[in-house]
Length: 202
Image (cartoon, rainbow, N blue to C red):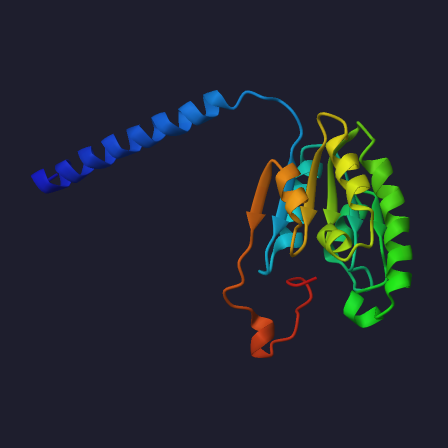
C-alpha cells in the first residue's frame, strides 16, 4: 500500500469511527419503548407503497396488523391480495377516487363506515400496526370528524403503531405524529403518458 493509500485509509477509518460514535450515542439515547405515529405525506409517488411495506414487515415478524383504505378500493390491489391471505383484516371505502364519484354525501357515508372499523382497530391492543391509507383526504375534505380521529389515534393502545398516508396532511396530524416523511414529486411516468402498471402501481 502506498503512503497516499495508507493516508486515505486512516482518514476513512477516523471518519467512520466518529460516525459510529455519533450513531451509537443516538441509539443509546433512544430508550422509550412504545408504538409510534408515522405520517407519510407529500405529492410524490410511494406513500401507500411505503405503508404497505411496513405492514408486510410487521406480518413477517409474526405480528398482527390491520389496514383501512380510504379513497381507493375499486382497483385490484396486489398488497391486499397478499396480506389478506396472511390474515390481515382490511376495511375498504370501495367508492374509488372522489373526483370520479363526484358524490360528496355518498363518499362521506362510505368513509364513516370504514371509520367505524378503524375505531375498533385503534382500540385493539393485539394489533401491532394499523395502516390508515389515504386518511389525510378524509380530514382535509371534512368527511370525518377531525377531533374524533385525532383522539382515537392519540388514545390507542400504548404499543400500537399507526401509519397514515396521503397528500396534504393537516397541521394537527403532523403535530400528533412522532415521524413525518414528505415524499416530493420530482418526476412521474404518468405525466409522460405512461400508463399505471400492474405489479408496480397497484
